[in-house]
Image 1 (cartoon, rainbow, N blue to C red):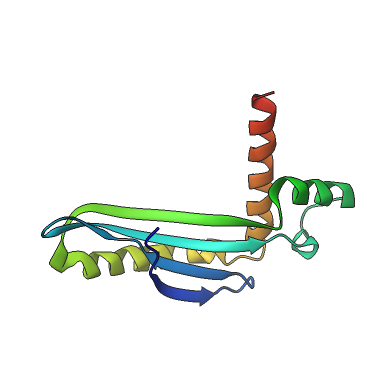
Image 2: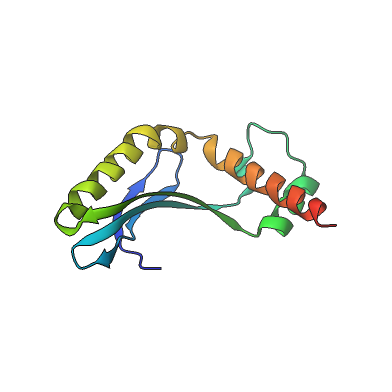
Length: 129
């Protein structure tokens, strides 16, 4: 990965959002512009306020997921002229901030993301049994 942290934002739900520029050249005068937003969500008992999670369920979540999960959002534009790269990247960032940050800033987001990842891993595990 060619991570170049463009911006770090502390969200209202005490999570840290990193916006990275993973753009790269694909020709002498063209690039693929890639914006990646990431949140490393630490799995903690106090995140589960809305759902009734027993200690046994929480222990199972920790065993399956470990102590953190990664939320990641990618957006890219291909064949962008090199001189337009920064402007296109800024538009991707601003669009993400406008459309997604209100959602990922909600206090319920970490809990929902953890439970979603947990369900997906359980389903995948059961599918290959």
